[in-house]
View 1 (cartoon, rainbow, N blue to C red):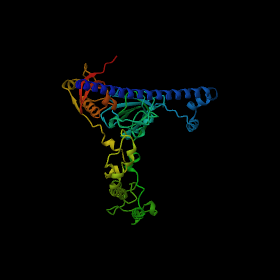
View 2 (cartoon, rainbow, N blue to C red):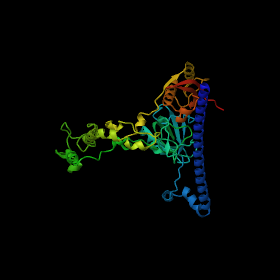
View 3 (cartoon, rainbow, N blue to C red):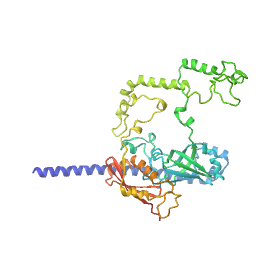
View 4 (cartoon, rainbow, N blue to C red):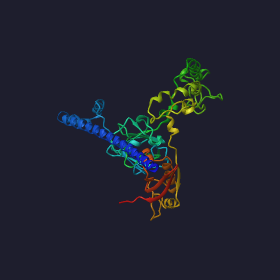
Amino acid sequence: MSARCSCGGDTAKKLCHQISVMRKELKNLRQLAVGSTRLHTKHMGSLQALLSGTDQGALQAGACQHTAVDAEHVSLEEGCIQTVPIGFISSCFAVKNGTPRQPTICSVSRATLQIQQSVFNNPDHSLAGLEHYSHVWIIFVFHKNAHLSYKAKVKPPRLNGLRVGVYSTRSPHRPNALGLTLAKLERVVGDTLHLSGVDMIAGTPVLDIKPYIPDYDSPHARRPTDLSESDVASGGGDDKRSGCETSCSSCPDCGDRSEPDSDGECPQPGARVTRSGKKPGMASRPFRSVLSEVKEYLRQGELSGVTTGEGTSGAGNEQTTDVVPEEGDGARLCYGEDAYSTIASWIRRPPASSLEVRFTPSAERELREFVPAGSPVHGKPRFKFLKDGDEAAAAILAVLSADPRSAYRRARCRDRLFFFTMDTADITCWFGEGFAEVLRVQPVKTS
């Protein structure tokens, strides 16, 4: 009798588990249906508006695309926003599987971007001067999104299923599927940019390129504005007068005078002199900048005891699946770069830890068979972007150590095999507990 009871209890547990799984699947199907209905309604509304305004605004619609600059400004003010890709990425990543989620994950990944001639009559002219910069911002479109639906809260893979707001993540599923990446500019050849450290797949439409300028883009370069009156009175006044206290012969603040340097000699004509009378490079950092960092450091030390206890109180009302700030985050004192900007704690300490990456002996042998693009050796598989097998191994290690699988695949999928493409190599691997092992490295089959 007891055996029958235990067997019946196990069956009931299995049935309950199956019912809970079915309920979750039904919930997902309902959400997909609601999203599809909303998307269909949106598309039907845009079609009706387009058809109703065709007769009255056909000329205006044509003018919105092909008129002069003044008309384009008017159309932008009226909400007629149109974007045209300036080029398409040619990358060592052919598909989404295995593509790094951030550019810093795989620094040896390479790509090229050729400016379209339909955008400029002379595309190479648009890149003149860009070779003076080491990094560029790339604004692109997530063109491989499976669907256009999006949610207010998402589950980043690094959080193992925990939810946060979409605008606090880099999720590709957003109302406007735009991406931003910081790539290293290797060189500019004619109308083509050669990039490294990319996280974009082949065929990605690029909307814009902007040079990375630390003086503008880094919060650390911004001048502090929260100094006290005493700081301004003592530091600012001395700074203004320091270049003009001694007799000089050519200074804009003293008419036509110039201050001698520390050796008692006047600077050469055309030499740049700072307001304090020192040449560039003689002083490492402004005193007021260092002072503001010290004040911020001390202020955090005074408040650390308060924020430790109260920093997490507001998150207690959220559901348990949402991200809650870790206890003690507010007590961490910051200085240097951290004193000027803050980030979520899970960015540097994610619940999903990095993986150990292994290569089987056969995979190592197969990887060594590949040769660089310019190699005179024939009859062997050839890389297009990567330099050699060592660089390919480093790229594979970087991608797999960050665990490219989604949170759903980690938790739900029993099949632990994973396939992705790196340059001209198809890689087969599998995931174990805390590690990933590369099983095969085969050349991409061309049809």
